Length: 298
Image 1 (cartoon, rainbow, N blue to C red):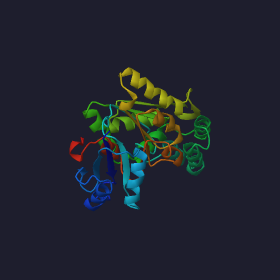
Image 2: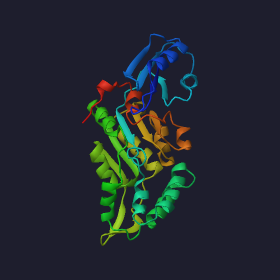
Image 3: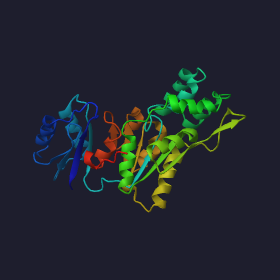
């Protein structure tokens, strides 16, 4: 079986130079098998007839790389391109946790962000943690959501390019969040997702009630939407890619053909097929074998 090792760094600090590529190809005995996907940023090294497992090969490459800020993905070359992307929103497609930013409007960011962090690590169950945090938002004017969207929410670098490129190549892209529809609708439109799913904050007389509509969209609901989309679009799970950062993403990451932990909590990074610690979201395109020249920039 033919494997491919992909080396990726962040575009803002390129670290995949020719010397690094040469050292990796020589160590793997594949001196003529490198392909530059983006100069200084990403490269593929094809591995023919390797008896090592993908994990063992990736470990060897990381030993060669050392402290360089480079992500490593090793996988069979066949089937890299995916036809479905399912992605988390908070701290994945955007830099922030929306509920924490809403809490800042009430001077409660530190209190709520502590609960958020514990829930994302998997230390506490997601659903009761969400109810507790939403309860603390009772009385917040609904207009504050627009303020947060305009002033506090920043898209994660590479996200729009990821979605637009995959869609241009026939993939379906779904944003599935444990956050709130007030945010996913806007973020989905900005990035270009085909659909978005999230929780609904209940409101009355222009203010948040401190309640969230039930049932809560959490870990199992994310996996279930992945499974529904596979059935609806007549896909195989091997054709799917899931990306997230927190414990409530674990089920969909484990179920997908390629599960990716993006700058994730340890509990997620330990079980994902791949982890991105350095690259931006375009790393998910290099993972699939796209070159920079293939990117759709719109």
